[in-house]
Length: 211
Length: 211
DNA sequence: TTGGAAAATTAACAGTGTTAAGTAAATTTG
DNA sequence: CAAATTTACTTAACACTGTTAATTTTCCAA
View 1 (cartoon, helix red, strand yellow):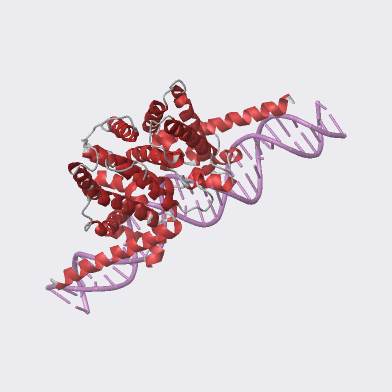
View 2: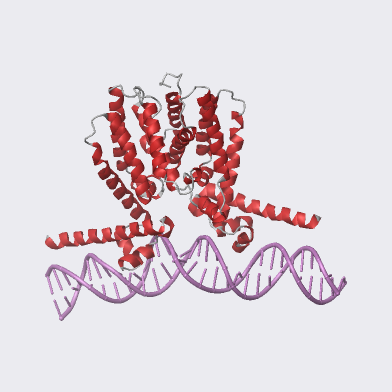
């Protein structure tokens, strides 16, 4: 079955070619300037060829959104060695903020754009990437509660709250709402990290409440 | 000069006609389905007429974004009578969440879509609506600190953090990320309000930390 | 070498934002 | 009141968009 295998491999290669070209356009020209025709130009195929590898444009975006989660997962490998769950939670937040600011296009697809969620509904399946991320967060939050580092309440609720805040920070930043409140040209990430520091120290039972 | 005045009034009427039609389409059909041609159809003018009243599509969206802020301001009138600043902060958050969930299209324009901010840069002016809203929030946060209701830190930072959390909640909800973590068909707003309750009680120096 | 499947293309449809040029209506001027 | 001018509006067009049907080219097996 060498031939069918090779064909499948070739197919995957072209899929990757398309995804890479899409992301390149997305990063360099912005969401609105990613068109099937420009993707096709980039990979030197005709526009309709793209449709032989992806059902429609949203499916391309869905795949990019998945790649984004992979990248984020990779970034979070530095958490594994952190024993203290509150420290881990803090570092998890820092990772999240950094990922969002360094990969605004991926972040957009993962947490802002409608297309990937639309595709999810179409396919009738769960948001596995989102669920997995939320589970990792909730596990750490639960651990913090068990060790008495933060107040014992509903871990689900606290996870959602913490996630909402870091998401709020990143999404305001990458959609140009945050810079409006800072001196011209000021770096956003340090301020965002201060917000996170504040949250963690406010959360913390043993902390000063001052950060 | 009655005639110039009347003409100006007529001009404003057609502008309003266009904005109303745009919002109607935006609410009923979603952002992507608002086209100049459909707006023109609705107001029974030719598509190019729209360009006599607005420079481009983004300018329409910018104006809708401003109307959104007006609506939000109106909603916040119920805050004026609240003496206790922490209560006021809490209620301000509730208003924010409710506004977002009841007017997702306006919210989108105010805090998610890029178009209005793009227009702002083009016009070279500040985000007055955003600044005003942030000032109202910061004033209340400062008052909480002065009265010793919450920890004395940087009011700007705490305001940003609080805003980020409620924005995070609303933006996750209206971009279909929140329902993925709740039972099918569950109402989002109550959960979001619980998150807010948690934040306020965690913030509060006199509180139980349990909500 | 030929038959058929697979891969890629061309042509087309219905739509988009936007502009230039032309027409109809209203107002000012003689 | 009639002519000239300004204002309001429309038609036609450009260069795009996602997507599909029909057609051609390429590849592999018999």
